Length: 437
Image (cartoon, rainbow, N blue to C red; front, side, top):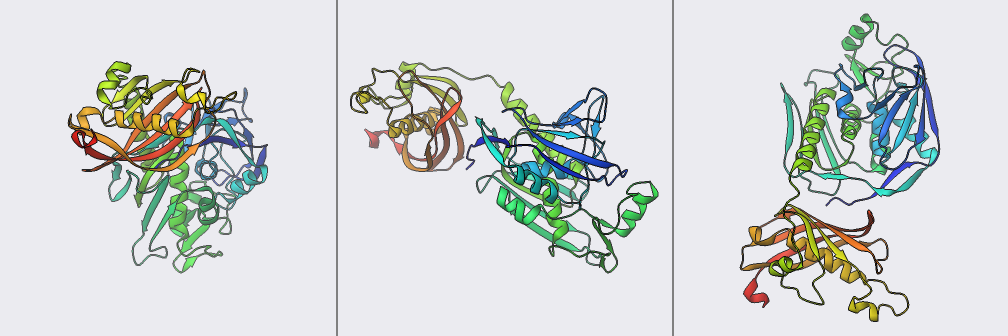
C-alpha cells in the first residue's frame, strides 16, 4: 500500500521574489538543499542572528485564513503555499531563507515555487522517508466544517474536498479529488489560486491587510463571478483547498498513506488533524517494544527448519500489527557454496523468504489460532535494491496492512545498515496446520 522511498532535497539553490499579501513587503525566498533527516525550516535573514523556525506542529500559531509558524523569536506568515510546493514535489529536506515576516503571494498559488524548484532540480538522498499508514479514521469537526483521514484504498495520499457556498453564491458548490503525486500536483493543483468573496476582501482592506494586492493578483468573487480575472479551472477554489490541505498536512513531517476527506474546512481544522496524527505517532513510540524471541522460540511459532529458518531473532513484536526481526548473514550459509563461488551474494528469493517469515510471525497464534498457519499467496511490488553479502545483518520489518477472514496482507522491508535492501507487499492465506503438514 505505502511504498517507501528515498528522501529528497534540491540539487541547487532556487529563489522566488514577490510581494507579501498581508502587509505588502517585498520578499525574497531562497530554497537551499539540506542534509538527510533535516526536515524543512524557515530562516528569517532579516532578523538579528537569523533565527530558525522549524516546520513542526508545535510551532503552528492560529491565524485567520492562513497558516503561520512561530517561535519565541520569529514567525513566518502564509507558509501553506510554499509548503504545498515542497510536499507536492516530495522535497523532504530544505532550508528556506526569507527576508520578511511573510512569504511572497505571487499569484496566490504555488506555481512560482514549483517552477523554481523544478528548475533547480531534485536529488535523492541516502535515507528513507518515514511513512505513516493510517490504520483508523482521524477526524476534526467544527460546526459544519469537517476534515478526516481514513485508512488507504490506494497507495499514497488521496484528498477529496467539497466546497459549499450555497446555490445563490458566485462560488457555489464544487468538489475536487486528487491522488497526490508530483506530476498530479504540478499539473492539476499548483496553479490554483487563493480566492475571496468581495465582502471578505473589503473587510480585510479595512483592517489594513492587502494594501498592495489587487484583483489581478488573486481571485476575488463579486456577484457575477471573478472581478477583473478569469478562472483557470471551473472548480479552481476546490482545487486550491486541496492545495492548502497538502501544504498543511506536510507539517506532520512524514509521508501519509490514507484518504483525506474535507468539507468546508480550513487551515485551523487541518492543523488540528495534524496534531491528532502527531499524538498517534507519539503513542506508538511510547509503547513497550514487546517480547523478544530467540531462534528456539521462533521454531515453535513457524514450521520452517534448517536450512530454511531465516529469522534468527525477533526484537519487537506487536501481535497482529507489526514486528522487527534479525537475520545474520554469515559465510557459513549453505547457499553461498553455489551463489556464487568467489563472489558470495545472498539470493534475492531468500531475502524475500526471510521477509515472508517475518510477516508470518506478526500474526503468531493470537491472530491465527494454534491450528492455523499463514501460507504465502502472492508477492507485489517486490524490489531488490542492494546486494546482501556475508557479514551483513538483515533487519526485517513487517507491518500489517489488512486482515480478512481468509487472507492477510503485509508490507515488509529488509534493511542493511539502515538502507533498504529489499521490500515487498505480501499476501497470505490462512491454512490449517494439519493441511500444511
